[in-house]
Image: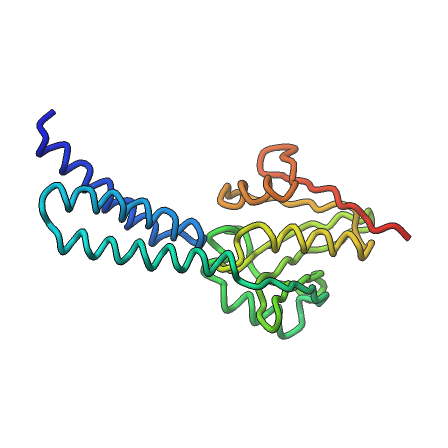
Length: 208
């Protein structure tokens, strides 16, 4: 393979990674993939002596590294609000993040008045909403389990289900979906796949 062709392939890979990163919903993943793409683009730019391009990508790396460090230092002081689907805040959050919610929960239509809703707050900021129905067997049948992009490091989900367990209102969480976009997250916070599109998480209730 000619050196020129190899360099062009490297350049395309770097550019492709930068473009792909901009389409990611996870802020952390966006930053990391963007850093990788910019690093590859710098190698290409230096090789073909396109120094302004190298300088631009070096600047992007500095910005993304700084933002990633800031993300990890983001103070998290979670608390959970128990609500109903008919209340104003759940409806507001669903409307505000509707497009992003549908990326993960394409089967979701709307909240109903009798839905059990748990809203996660960090200070005065709503960081996520989990909604569904708790049946007579204490199964929490989830419609949506949505976290805003800045808090998608699994800490929100781990905290949420720990707090729900403490309430004693349900003993397991059941989630069914036709999409796999949420699958990695569910595995990380303890869900087990029991059949195609169906996941279950057992909750540990707080001792009396």
